[in-house]
Image 1 (cartoon, rainbow, N blue to C red):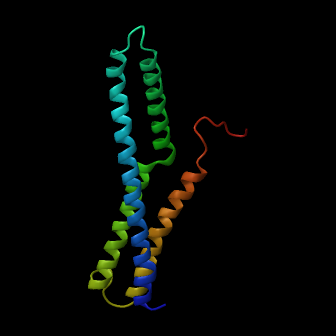
Image 2 (image 1 turned 60 degrees about the vertical axis):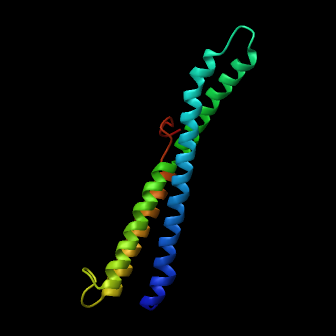
Image 3 (image 1 turned 120 degrees about the vertical axis):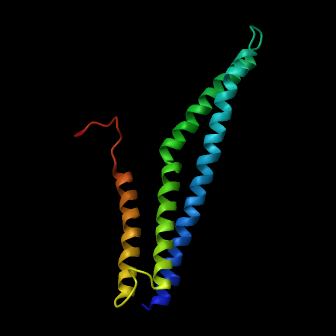
Length: 147
């Protein structure tokens, strides 16, 4: 594979993917966290409106409490914040390697610059993939070993 092909097909493709995924995870994290904050902050206010005759308000407050718990669980389960940061870090690291290579800046001076680029890019990508695989394989905190 020629350097131009690698830059366009592999490196740019990876940069675009990590950029898109970072933005998506950032958006999901911020919207869910914002909703969680608004709903949680509204509970005491609405609870203050409750009278003996207002059963609808009691149901609403209960539902809002459940909603806060669900959003918190979704944020924890899908780890949008952690993914946002990991994907952004990998994206920016890949961009840095691209610009160093294109400008001939260390470590891309002299011989074997293309091989160095490929090795460094693939290391960055595989590191992120390894982190993701380790996350998927991580046992639940409540799970006992051997059972």
